[in-house]
Image 1 (cartoon, helix red, strand yellow):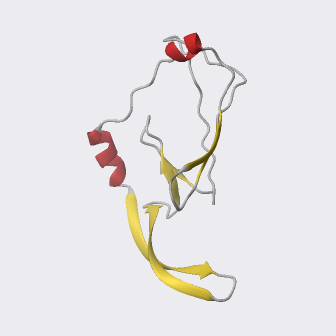
Image 2 (cartoon, rainbow, N blue to C red):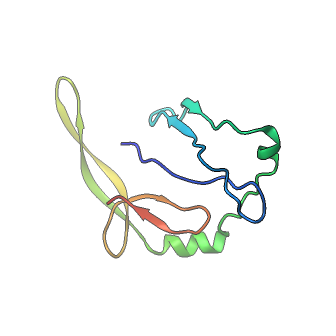
Length: 114
């Protein structure tokens, strides 16, 4: 399952966004290799002016981890010939018990599947 992540690029420290430009990135879930990348039509000067926001600290990340449960459950693997099951670990937010899609690296917010 692919979960799109939406983010913005900012031209300067006043958070003026680079409008109407998108990144499309496809990553192979098995190998982790980038299979497809299409970027915006922006100049090198705009990219150099890009201001990266700071990421959460290690302490903030540790705090976020306190709100995560690890659940052991059965998962079905569907093959062309047969279906098999295996035990997997799944990450879920403690309250409510929702499956975690990712953690926002800028805020530490837990983002769950709906």
